[in-house]
Length: 591
Ligand code: ARG
Image (cartoon, rainbow, N blue to C red; front, top):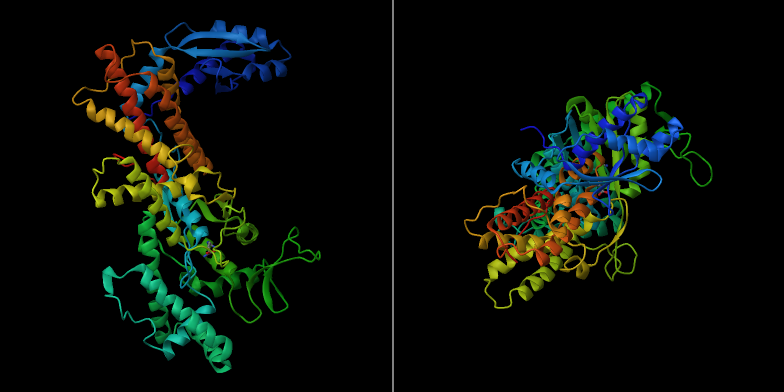
């Protein structure tokens, strides 16, 4: 089905045509159409154009108005101020556009004109360590971006670049070889029913015990160091132990992902270890091409504009003086794989803003080496820090970073209180309360994260997140529930647009907001800014409230009016559902 142009797009086109008819010498120029409070739309393009042509903007605007054809799109247009155009469209145009939109299963969202392949690096926790709020951000934002890009028709390859390699594994593995039963599933059943919590407890125990030994026993320290070498050389026994540790962590990550309601496929978990075999080559190529040079025994890449406080250059270290490969070598090898083998034309990294310099240096190095060309776009999408109510990075009272799973459990607990308060007559079973609390609580956490601009820090405040008022997912979910209840009570009466009807102000406002959905999704997918979609959906739920208060649906005066309002209700519900689905947030049918 051909994409359904929005009303805004149609008006824009109409004005652009009138502009070139009125002023053929100006060539094509943008009428700069915006939504407006004074009328439905305002066009400002005449000002800049008149300035450029040294004409009078009011006079130019008048000529544009005269060049507009008389039809059923525009009800009123007036020249105002220094030369704006205020435009009011007809109710008929609004309703017919929305009817066409409703007939499209994609709600008018066009597919990308030239979809390509995006490799997105997100949700990259570290093996044998707890997942914390930073991993929450990367997971939630990355998941939303994947959904948005796929909806637009882009081929998306997900990469969970987990921290599963490095010197600390020597210590863990050496301890395991000396204490072979350390990771045994003693008290738990094991297998599929194995709890993630128990897995993390075992890993934590292993980590602490091996750390203690490492710090106190020189002999163990030596053996642990030798173990790293064996690991990197691919020694079988060493690898077997390494696999046990990674598998154990995956049990834990899975539990968190399930709780978060985010799908992570095994095939997409391609951690740092996956690039081990190509690190040597990556270094060799960098050195041969002169991109990297030896400095104090290490293999380094230098940048004119990256200097430390002492004014000395700070290099990107690809290989340390002791021969060990750094984080950067892995990222460079990953770029070669993503471009060379996966044929990515866009590479995205949803990673903490504090790694901005690392990525700037890695990307620049890959460009110098020719692994990234003009054909590839590479973007670090940095996100800010999650703060506690005191405005400082979110920590427990003991000063440790907060465990993600605890936060999620608490969010679901709070949500369960909200659900129970709503269920005054206690009609819901415990299982129903739990089901809804999951959707509300997890939705609240995701929405709070997605609704602030990605690069900003935000305060993790559960009270605010699960509030029924304000810019929250619960508010949006609740608006949707109200609509669903109307639609259910409507029985077999069909939602039908009646373009011959005239619209009440609250209906118009709601309808004009609905008109903006497709363009919002398109812009959000192009700019990687999910918070704009969240803002749109909040605006839609907000526009629904006066409609709900002022425009009775099932008790409307005429059957046509009722059908038309039912139509607006249903399109609002579908739009809210589709929009929230793109953010990865579920919509309960009832609350
Ligand atoms: N594992 C890292 C961390 O927890 C994030 C990895 C980011 N991705 C990358 N390709 N470097 O901070």
